[in-house]
Structures are given as structure tokens and as C-alpha cells.
Length: 236
Picture 1: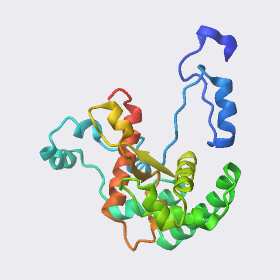
Picture 2: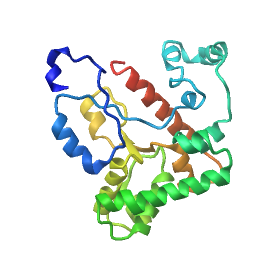
Picture 3: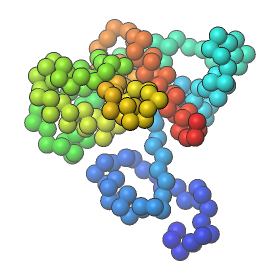
């Protein structure tokens, strides 16, 4: 690739693979300034239906809100129960192949267990995996809430510095994410307390042990779809 020099074309070479945080640093050091990175997010609703696209945000964001219902009706997009969509999430296997709630429960339980036993232990010498799993559950119950690490530590019986480290670990392993509040002042936007969301609503719903998805899960799902759309329109 280097020998091609200016003959290289954008997208001529694609290097794909799983995001192993242990190797990302060495790979990044070898490709600094020579590669662009694209994170592969969980599937959007329309992707699970066979369309290579997120929601109809291109159309909606140029229309007044009061016309959204009419616009969506005109687009004739497929409909579904938002609760079922949030239960399934966007991870390929449960989203595409598992229709039974019990099967999904078993899959997500195994996923969470493997995350703690393998991913987390490779990255950090956690003292108590049950406490870490408990923090995951508490974080799943706080979707859309401002992050209060003191309250989270009290409920999890952990110190505030420990909560901070483990929340960072959830972000490093692409489980949870912090979304900064909107402000016209960019500095204010960065320093104000962020909200907590998850990359996948199916996993978050499983960890919360709720009987049914809530409005917070739907909000999280819409956020994930908007992020997928935003990455296709980085200047908007």
C-alpha cells in the first residue's frame, strides 16, 4: 500500500477485524496518518429489515415536527412494536435469528458472562467480578440519566474512583457510552455532566431485568439510530 504512493484511491484497501482493545494501540501506532477508522455499530432497525440505512432522518430533519407523522405515512416504512425492537437490540444474532424471549435471555446472559470473564479480565485485574457485573446492572437501570458516580458507587458499594474506572472499562469495551449535553457553548458541552446510554438496547434490557422495555430503552434505540445516521453525514 505504501509503495503505491499517490496512486492509492480512497477505499481501495479495507482492513477489517474485531475491535480488540489490547491490539488497537499497536495497530494505531503503525497506521498513524495512513488510515481512517470506521466503528461497526449494532444493526439499525432498517438494517435488520434488509435495508442498508438508518432511519429516515434525511427527510424528517428538513420537515417541521408536526408533519412527521404524514411524512412517515408517505414513506410507507415497515412498522413494528417498539418494545420488540428494543428487546432484540442490534447485535446480529439476537436481532436477526432469535425470536423467542427465552432464547434471547440465554444469549445475552452468555454474552455478559463472557464479557466479564474474558474481555474485562484481559484489560483489567478486577478484584470482584460479581461487583463489576452488579455495576453493569445498575448502569443498565440508569439509561438516559445524568451520571452520578457517587450515587452509583453507593448503590454498588464501590468507591467513586472504582466506579469511574469501571465505567471507563464499559466504554472501552463498547458496552456503555456517555453522551454530553447539548449547549451552544462547546466548552460547556464538554464539562457538563453527561448522560449514560448503551450501545445495544437488547443487552441493556436484559441486564435491567425489567418486565418490559421502557421509554428510556426506546430513547436509547433512537439515539443509536441517530448516531449511525450522523456517521454517514459527518458535516451535519
